[in-house]
Image (cartoon, rainbow, N blue to C red; front, side, top):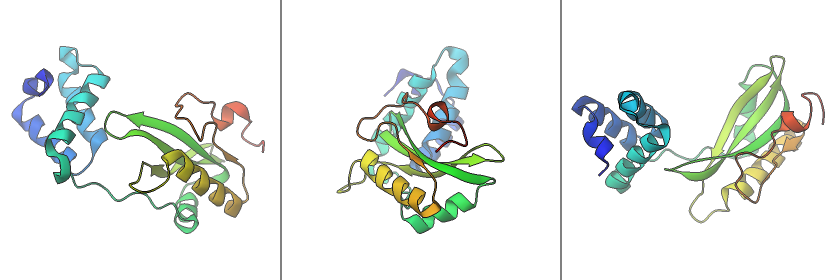
Length: 172
């Protein structure tokens, strides 16, 4: 067990465990980091503390259902964002709990920005997250008749160029 875990107050430990058991990893990391940052804990160490709790609880963690990747569900989520969808993009991300995963986003214009569509984790018996996200993103982009961008579908790369750095907001 992490030495940092023993530095947390009991109330914070209970809150972190509740977050972990509900698979709310970011909330758990935030609680650990905010409580121990004054003592010199960094964000990476906070993730490691939470990862240790995930390992401790194992199968007792109530994992959230994966985001649906069918065109209908993704199109409905895209339509729920303010602004016009001008592209669909897939971006790698990762953390110590979930390893590498891909985030599908709708690139929006007027107002400019992006909206979350789905997070694609490794699924047991399924294709790698890059392949699944590439297929789902391309299908949605065809359906919406907008461009699709995924700079690195085969190799996790959270520093790959984003669409708006490769194309302008109105470019194809």
